[in-house]
Length: 401
Image 1 (tube, rainbow, N blue to C red):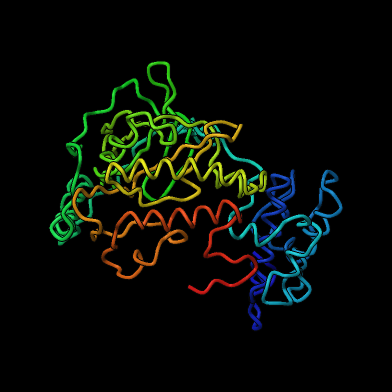
Image 2 (image 1 turned 90 degrees about the vertical axis):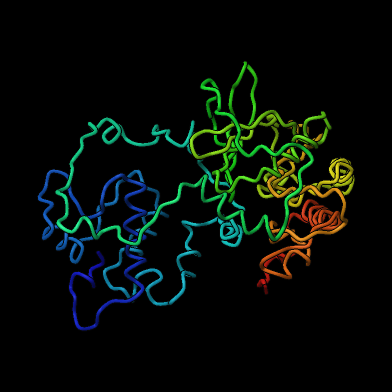
């Protein structure tokens, strides 16, 4: 707590208390200790409260002069003299030498690469937690049964995800009949016990992708909650990604695991085009853009010849085959659709806003799909590869949506 909160005077407190908390947090992250607790001394609540109001924190000699200055200014007792306390913005804090080298616009738009990325071997990996907690015994502490048990869940119902998907899709199917080229996989077999998820490589709105080793070969498993699973995605993968097109990741199999659907595909070990651009590690000249785009057009041509649309062409769905960045593969057919007879048809909207064509945004309940949908996305993707940002984002300018 900041001193003015402890004093609880008639003047109250303002936004400066949050900047005090940032100072405390900075101290704790850099030292592993609290700034107002002292080893081998009394640390009761009254002792800590007294130090907060009367004593400056002890700064270890291991800290540099810049960070010492930052912490002391953030932990100034007078909120009006506290860094950031005399204004309603964080300008003074962001301009402190402690943050020298940080591009705040880049950070805000999530284009700055994290200095440390924890290693995870799956959703239940606990290696980054202290053994103090992970080795605690698992004990059951049942609570007494409430006296009004029979009333607690009146009017409440639960529907399992697999049934919810079928119920929710009934209206959509009636309004927009779904067409498949292959027999739709609506009830896939259970995943083999030897098919185990390894490293998380990406996470999106509709699923997560992991590497897996199966039969001594590396694959990618896209894990989709059953409520979000579209058989149309697998239908498109079977038709477009199973015959070995050089610029489309190949399809392998589909399984069920609990309430999730596992879609197994070829593992493409290179980086996403978006990742290379976002990290400012590479810039693409016109010849390189042209080479990438020719491969992408060939892949889209193949998809359209099969009478599908990809529906979500973007930099994030284009992956380099290796670090040489000479060959790409198109992945993620989560928005794909098949249509055998009509040039245009209406379907439930599926798009990424920065790449979406106008016909995707005209009605909240449906979008008009055709091959031209992908053509627009191709143009937006080419612009993004060459310019380093999507067409709807103008650098250092407000976005009017």
